[in-house]
Length: 327
Ligand SMILES: [Zn+2]
Image (tube, rainbow, N blue to C red; front, side, top):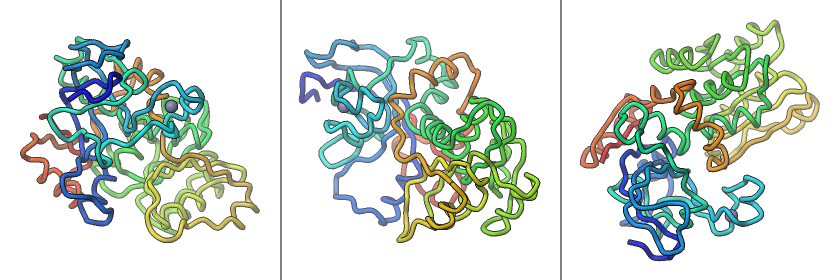
């Protein structure tokens, strides 16, 4: 239901489960009974508040994983995730995307319109859903890592974000992209998305393998899409002196795996953080619509709303990469 005149209510057409939702599923992040979940969704505007100017009932729209007012200084700078009026779907008192409908605050600042015809194109809708989080987050990592035409890139993490990082690096013109991963299904997608090499080793062996591929040096641009101490240590290990790490893995665990002394000596930069995907959607959308990039293969299991628990189980047991929800 509309609560503020700047709200719209969306009927959800597609949503999905994020790797970060698993922390709640496993009981490792606190949730309250009745609290909603799901921060990636697209749908049709079903109701619009009296002060909503940009959207009307019937519009097909995609939501980024945080809402933002679109009017403050941070939003103007493109850092929509720092909007003081912004928030994260599924936080206490707000709706989540894994349901039938969502109340969207600050609709004009938050939502992005999609072509109406996409609503009847099943494959395209799935690809467009990636704009909600994983594609924009992968892009943020690639930008943070400083990927440009001709770059050599290494990607730590073979989840949906890491794979989208490969896609984003390729899109930005990277020449060589080394994907770290050992699950065949995932590394096959990485190759489809543009990876030129795959390294299956982990830890110190992975660092050695990447350096061997690159003639003893690391990569200029490294994408870190896991968020553990081990993955960050690997990322530092495979970065060339003077290179940059774009990190988008949500940090978990007590330490960071960062040795500032090593990073200082080797002039390694660290950039990234929570991705302001709202800012990136207008840039990435045309390439998804034209089929220049197609992130839909990251969704490898589809469930209905009543099968969502099975979807969580599949992702928790790593039998599914990313679960698509069709309400
Ligand atoms: Zn704002």
